[in-house]
Amino acid sequence: MSIDRGRIRITGFDADRVERREPLSDWTETRDTETESRWERAWREFRRNRSAMVGLYIVATMSLLAVFARPITVAGVTVQPFSLAPYDPSAILYAQGLDVSAYEAPSLAHPFGTDGSARDVFSRVLYGGRFSLSIGFIVVLVTAAIGLVYGAVAGYYGGRVDEVMMRLLDLIFAFPGLLLALIIVAVLGKGYWELVLAFTAIGWAGYARLIRGEILKVKENEYVLAAKALGARDRRVIFRHVVPNAIAPLIVQASLSIGTVVIGVAALGFLGLGLPPSSAEWGTMLDQTRQTIVQGPGGSIPWWVTVFPGGAIFLFVMSMNLIGDGINDALDAQEGEDVARGGEV
Image (tube, rainbow, N blue to C red; front, side, top):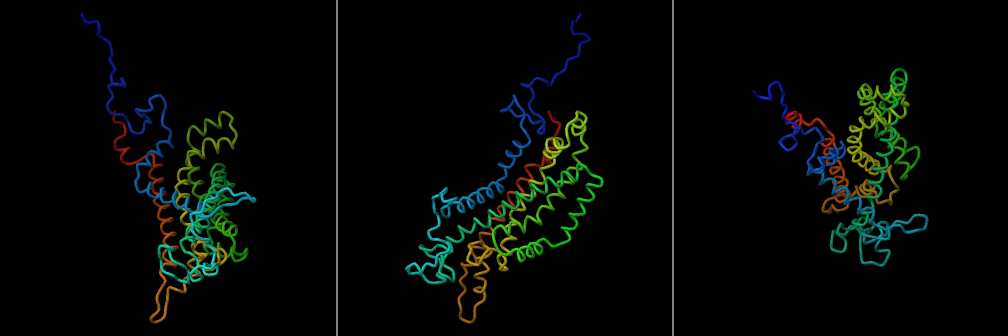
């Protein structure tokens, strides 16, 4: 007589015998004692994206070149003593006794040539990254923060609060973005912080509408209702439970918007409404040399004064788009391949 009669034997729970596990289960062989968070998984997926990593390396290199282009002094203290730029970006070289003339072609002494004022284009392109890149990062950081709070409040409370706040967004969207920035700069005048304010005034609305749509979906989940039932305050529910689960699209949008802001700043600079004419900002450099594009009969075009600043804009914006696409793929927790294999053990 068998002693196993009537017993139910369950198999498949022995970790040593399981050959395949569900990809979305957060289980990894190297981390069997703790789960892998969403952000760790996103970073792992991002690193697998070669084009995104190339974009990241390019942006990091351009940022470092801009930081170390010339020494940085804060309150009389030099916090960055290095200088990768061989010349002062605003220096007229022949006025310093150097044998340099205007519109010299690229050479070993001047890799990017000189402009119409006999200034070294290579030094100006390196140093100009400080203006273009810093404005892009600052504007996106500020606008994303404002839009996050505004959209989270509107989406969480809903009703009349949402209605009034969304009508204000409609008013902002009624104006073309670049035109509104142009008007603000024309009223306030040229300057670094004037550009930051102009693009911040129009940029936050897009983030607010995006995060508001995500909040409307997330706030209906059970864990949000549970937090409310436990007596959590609205501020804690919004920023502890709702926003972290709705912020992924905003991060993607922010990474893509940095390049858009840089193009906008360059556009205003090209129209003569950016930084002062002597500034090394990339768009302003194009504005100061656009008359060289068209020459009379027999004239030569100094292509380097427009190609190198324009190429810097192109390279940075393209790299940011690659990064944004990589972030979008990495944060997509429901990738088609994983869903297709989901449930296999």
